Image (cartoon, rainbow, N blue to C red; front, side):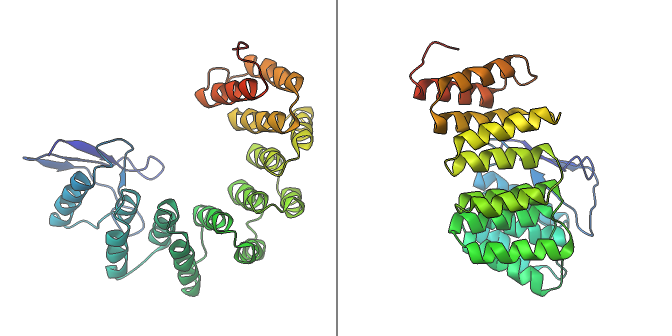
Amino acid sequence: MGSFVVQFPSKLKNFTVWASANNLRFNGGYFGGFHFFQFSRGERANDPEKVKELMESIREIGLQVPMGSEAKCGFLARGLKVFDEMPMKNLVWWTLVISGAVQNGEIEMGLGVYLGMRRTGLVPNEFALGCVTKGCADLGDKELGQCVHCFVLKVGMEKNPFVGSSILNMYAKLGDLEDAERVYECTDNHVGCWNALIGAYAQCGYGFESLMAMSLMQYRGIPVDAFTFINALKGCLVVGNLNFGRQIHGLIIHSEVAFSTAVINSLMDMYFKNGESCML
């Protein structure tokens, strides 16, 4: 087996496991009562056979197996088995199961796991809530989405930028712009929430309102980022006004994201769909 690397999330501790056919080397790392691993992105890390062999090596030295790694590499059933065998399940593991299920398209399973976690009395963190709201939007389950929103209000997490923007996006994807606007009114002036609002207007077909939101954002002195421009360019496509797109292009040139691949792709898409192919 070729060697590959598993990295511990930097916000916890630096942690590296290196495995090959003849050697296994690892440095210590501990979090929440379990050793925690997260596979780095890349072709090798997504190879099921290599992932399986590494996990077996980890088991042999007595460490807990990384639930999230199995789920994200296509081992959802195997990962759930590991999860079920855990004597103690903390918030980290519940969140990884929910995330793994939703990311693998098993949305109903992910939402079911979320409900199971709630029955244990654990309070989900912003990452679990983000996955759940995405799942509700993908399934078109507005009723469950509203229940999640009510829970967020109950525990006082509505001003969390990640949670607020996730719920706002959920309502936008469900076509409920009125509720999306109400969610925005409860959030702080965080750039992520502004971006979600701009994207919500564009997604619901209100291109002019999307551009007005970006203009108001700049008027209030809130710094824009790549996602602001990407969502605003979607608004330009809805309006079908090339002049607006050119103005945003000018802002992009004078910004710190002028060479962002995602922004450039959005610009190209805007120009091509408006009949211009030589502006970049």
